[in-house]
Image (tube, rainbow, N blue to C red; front, side):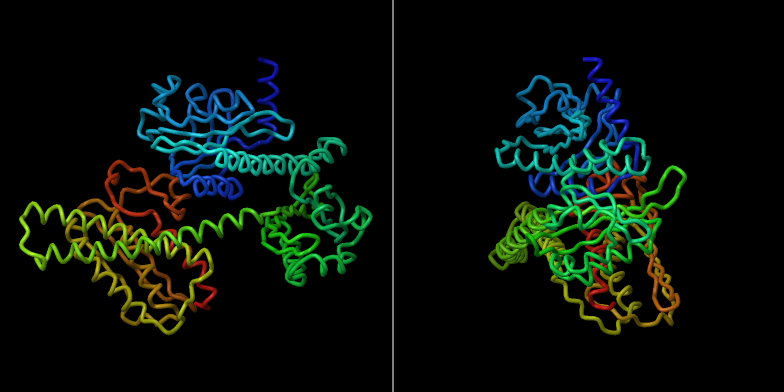
Length: 501
């Protein structure tokens, strides 16, 4: 109906979300979708008059598709999920570009996204290149993820209303109470103002304890509510000292219920740009943290279970290739080499998965000690040089002879350098060049790895360190790898503080 479509588009444009940069709060949802469904592709898109524009995605390189040929267009026609276990059995998708094109989608489930007013403005999708029978439990999980995305839309709407001050107090209150996050506005003077019903319910407080009261008046409740009350106070004060920045931190609550909370704080200004204080959103992430923990345990368990048979397969194949079990023909040896290469790739994948699992679970213990960084670089370069020579690539080391030692975990430094150089080698064409530079700067040493590789788009650069991300350049489609190497590099860099490295 034209009038309904006009209102839907009005609600979409009011969010001011189209053509905006990626945001972690939506990326977290598509990443979680991929983990839960164990499917390679997920995206979150919004549908305007002519297109389905992608706000967040995993496993695709789609920015937007014409509305008439998008799965999202079909999804927003109903409040129910669109479920297609096998597109080959559905005539609607016989000539669909995502089905017959390079993405080769064979199954999908999509759920509409609604604004606080109930207008269907977009969709969350999970997709696979193989048929997939979706269980009721999976569809409920997809619905739950959509609710999380809709809560983010409600928060966007709330922030817009507060910052622009264009709606009535009743409208603001209705939107605030619609979100599942606890909302609290703390003025520049430390006095508490706006809050929603969810904030009171989260912490077992009464409105009289909040309205017009100084933050310090909650000294007792804060001690009762949070596991680490002093750390919570410090985080709130640090956010207040950064008036122009958005901040985010995690905390634990043990009263009136046990919860993991993510606290976000954003500056709020009036029309003239005057600072009104900071808007705090308290989000219950207990379930998400539990899902992450279960995922990590599953990956660790599966990886350990795979490692033993793979080690056995690899050992026996090596014996056969070496002739220890009798002479083999050239054809048999060729087949055995294929088995060996694929088992080696599986071992690398298992090792990478175990590393990712350990890092995310905080089980990486760094053995920090003085390390000869120049020696580490030379060791990695020596090990990879034969592979580079096979592609006629040059490897140049620009490392000063007097490069100082650093304090680090030597094994992890070697791992980081290996991942960086291996990535440069894989994505540099035959005859290209790879360069490693190192230089001391004040109290640290900076190392750079450069190459003459195929390059990437701005969107691909944003996803470069994401788990399982692989660039889609046709020139490197046959490059092997897990898509985990650079993610491990970034994760190890982040965890360096745990070992004072």
